[in-house]
Image 1 (spheres, rainbow, N blue to C red):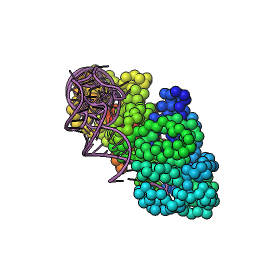
Image 2: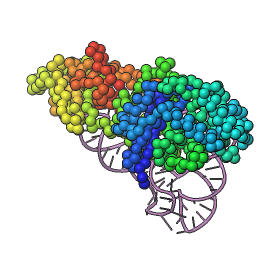
Image 3: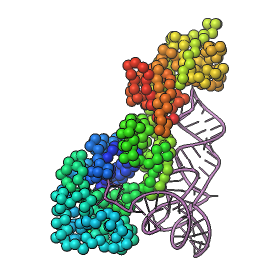
Image 4: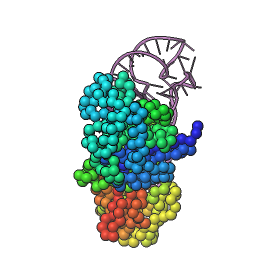
Length: 471
RNA sequence: GCUCGUGUGGUGUAGUUCGGUCCAUCAUGUCGCCCUCUCGAGGCGACGACCCGGGUUCAAAUCCCGGCACGAGCACCA
């Protein structure tokens, strides 16, 4: 097998979603396995229905690199390639397998459904070229004409009969302005560009199966061989439902979400900001593979992947929810010596080396409410205590029995913190105290007995902001 | 409605091309036990599936026919 060329072709009408990442992962992985390359192509030929967002281009390139660990081999923008598409369109008309149709969409549909020819179909090439030039020049208004690819009208699938290849759009394009009045539709643009880039394999969602069939008909006209095509089925992540870029865009501009990286959104930027590893996203899609089955997967599935990837390199910290202050009581008999500090490993398995040093001079500690109600507990990494009259009385430094182990914090090591937990359309706030030891913004930590979180903000004054990742 | 596609445990996946090696793989989940100075990690075990009905065959998850269910396309969106 020669060198393979794959492609990932998003519409840059917003940044990448979790759904897009399947295309990124599958295509880049196939390229990697076969020593091929990936073309990242921006399919931005719609200026009106789903217009491109100028900031999305660079963001998508960057997110592609984050997911795969390397840049795309080739990056192209369909809007830069317009002269080429228009040339092929004109060629198609001249050769007689494309024609300008001036019926309304409705008229055409009813003719098509009855396998009837539309009146424009029989026009001479010369008049088609005249109409074409009038489309190009801007004389023909939007909706006034469309270029169709001739197919057999007996095709069992009505969607394929004389399908539309280019239409008129007078809305200016955010990048190239009003240079062009005629823009290709996906099926035409994509088909031509795949050929020009030497794409050997197309891997895409099965919602594009009819696209393959339409494009194959076009390739036959041109005498080209269509690439090998594979499909994946529809995926629904239970917690999020679908991945509609335009839907999210509307919600963001209405202020329902703070931005594309709002933690409640299924975008790559949001998952990344929350602390998901790109390896987890990659492994997740690779494990689903390339079946055409429509599936529903819980977010827990990605979380399980992420946990096993980050656990061994994630430092532990203590976070006390709704902290209660408790005095530490020393036994009357002076046979128990405690110093002014203790050391606790950063990671219980030693996969992260080093210790956290806690000062304990003040003898005042913080405990979660449910732990102060237990008569005998062990302060993790320190000592056994008996809870008597609201006082935590030390009874042993060594672990003397199998009592409950509670996480805790000396008050001088604590700092006010809030934990933001995305929950459906809301964000729950958990007030607490975080262990103030070597914290850094963007650092992922495991809150002992609570779960993984990322440090979002460490303000000069006020509470540290933690964002919940998963258990 | 028409066209196309898919149906393996709760979820996802292997096996389906060339029928037997499949009393069906792995992961995740749930439950139990062990271990552990986290309710984390680790170990062991249990639970749990070939959509239904016919047919071919010595033999079917795998081939054939018919149902049923689910999904997608039927845009001058991608």
